[in-house]
Image 1: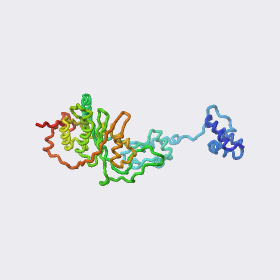
Image 2: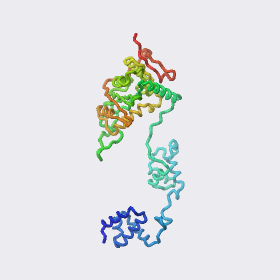
Image 3: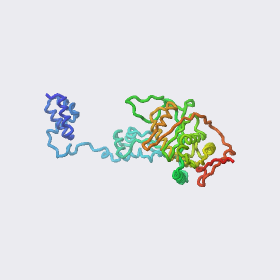
Image 4: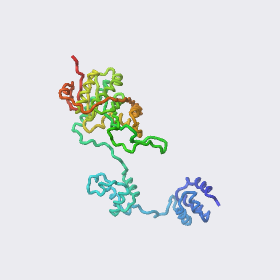
Length: 401
């Protein structure tokens, strides 16, 4: 009697060349030849179930099927949708995004898992399993999706016009070889053995172990990465602060870029153009930001033009998707345990298009709450543009007589 090993070798050799019907008939034929216990032995050798082989034994004694057919006509159970044609519409009414604001929707405040949907459908006289719910949803081109941050609130009526104003200013500056930088503060980061979103390749079953909680505590040190992205050269400069994100810190970061890179890269510069968000430490309403820019203009001897993005459009700032996004990708899954780790990870950020990033640590103090008097603010050599002077302005060096 043929043993199971030899039988398995036989099936492995011929199996890839047979269709479903031929496989089960071959298995049934071998089982009949083996006699008692043949079904079990063949099942172990070829992988088909005993039920399938037993049914195939009956097929051996039946009339051959037409060429190309695998089963006889009429085989198989009709689909659930044929029995219940209203099922897809009932399911879609439960997950349709337009019903999310309807307080009468039965699942308005419920997590819409496939099991929850199956229970709700059963209540509506549409009995169905949760596996079938998932199959139907995929068939209707639904998929599991998270949230995407895109909504920024109401658009300002001059939103597009301000974008055009910024674009015109940037093109004019780049066209004459003048430096143009995009600036902003990246999200502040907790220092310590805390979770950092994202994954990285590691040996199997050896995840980095981090603290179970990362509740904000005043005693936990924080890092404030302020980025300066050079639009003309595709380079980034990040000043990592350790104190507070203030207007003074923002301008100190720009000053650091100029000292370490800007004046070397642009020895013949006649002006500096900065594009910035409308809020935060470089916001257009912040007096300290403008006072510190005046000091910077005086020290470097260049007029500084600033164009702010309109409210609610911070994601359009180049520094966000040309610098910060790649920094986040580079350090994903890596706990930011200390300042050295942050500086090294930022400095190690590169892209296929040649982005290079310089990073330095700034341990100076930048106290909050500093007030700028009306007299001090009025002394600025600030020239607002004709179009939205609150968003677009130039700060020129003060001439010393």
